[in-house]
Image (cartoon, rainbow, N blue to C red):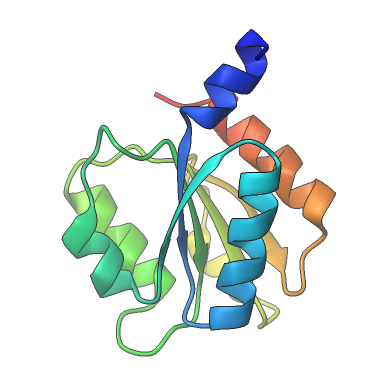
Length: 129
C-alpha cells in the first residue's frame, strides 16, 4: 500500500444527508477512493456523534428536515470546530448564505460530479487545520 493510500484510508469523512440513496452513493464513492466514510441521516445524528479528532472533512446537504446543514455548521463553529465542509444542495442560491466562511471548501449542486467532489475533498484535506 502506498503512503498516499494509507493516508486516505486513515481519513474519516462524515457524510450527512437525509437522502438514503445519495448518502449511500457518496459513501460508495469515498470507500472506492480509499477513504473511510461515516454516514449520518441528520444533522442531529452527526452532532451527537461528533468527536473533533475523528473527522477530517464533512460533506453535508444544506436542506434537511429538522436542523439544516447551515444550522449544523453554525453549531460546529460555535463549538470551535475547524472541520472543512463541502456542502451539497439541490436548491440553487443557497451558496450565498455561506458568505466568506473559509471552512466551506465548496458548494456543489445535486447530482454532483464524482471527480469534482473528490477534488474538493483533496482541497479540504490540504487546508485542514
